[in-house]
Image (cartoon, rainbow, N blue to C red):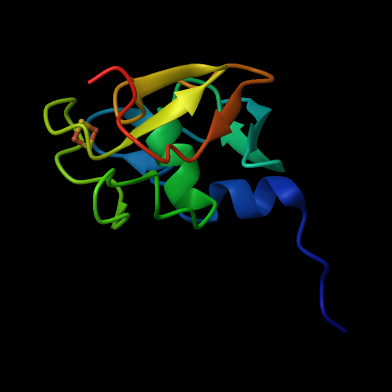
Length: 114
Ligand code: FES
């Protein structure tokens, strides 16, 4: 008899929850954000990019000229490959922006404002 996975199990499956330096991360609460119309669970305190990776989202934006997919690259806020539209604001670097309850996140189709 298979055990049906709980949503919170999936939200924790791809995350480091016991870290030798940061300590036990398993007690962080979960919150919901919407990504391109799909609701995913994120952990309080993590970045948008971390939540997206755990949910299997690998494309954050498309390049303006060739429409090639881009995703997490430097993960320290330097390259802009991870920018997305967050709560209607373009060019948000998701690798350094924490999630917040009810956030609306969309794949960015161009580098608006550049
Ligand atoms: S991955 Fe480089 S700025 Fe976010």
